[in-house]
Image 1 (spheres, rainbow, N blue to C red):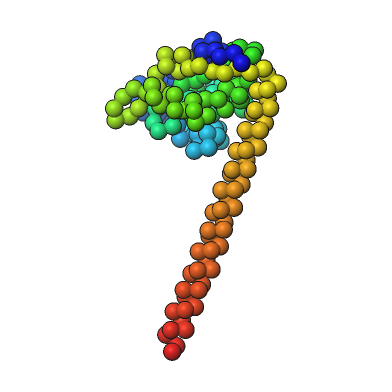
Image 2 (cartoon, one colour; image 1 turned 180 degrees about the horizontal axis):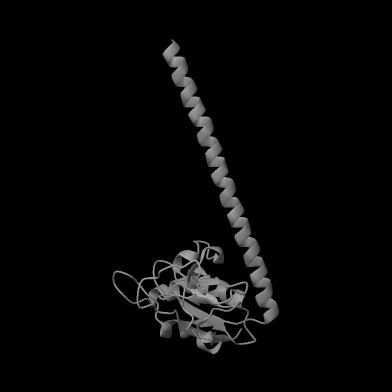
Length: 199
């Protein structure tokens, strides 16, 4: 299986650096993706994006379908996939944008590979900083990526999605079981207390 540097498969660029704090504007012409728009399951939620007025922003700054949104700072250095067109939308720093350009790599597969625990360990070992760890652009570009045939990538992505869905369902089931158990135990405790008070 070929091993290639991420820089040979995708463009890596820094998110847009705003000079001042974002001032949301309902009538703004540009949407902004921030860290809070990606959940703990590495899913991107475009429905709550802040809007700002930046009519001078150039086309090259806009996020496209198939781009990966990489969290370069913090406890998780994972990536989220942009699965649909967003229009005039920009990614805010400190996140980085990964745009696959090689026909031999699927964006969804690249996301899966980056988010693997083994890959996350490699990235964490190269993070810089003391109080807040950060992955630099050069480190990300040097990341070694295993590139199987496209048909294999597709199968990996499909199995990965099924496994993730199963894990989410299992988590929901455990939460509901715990809630039911807590409710039954509370009823038992209240019943015991009532019986004790009447004796």
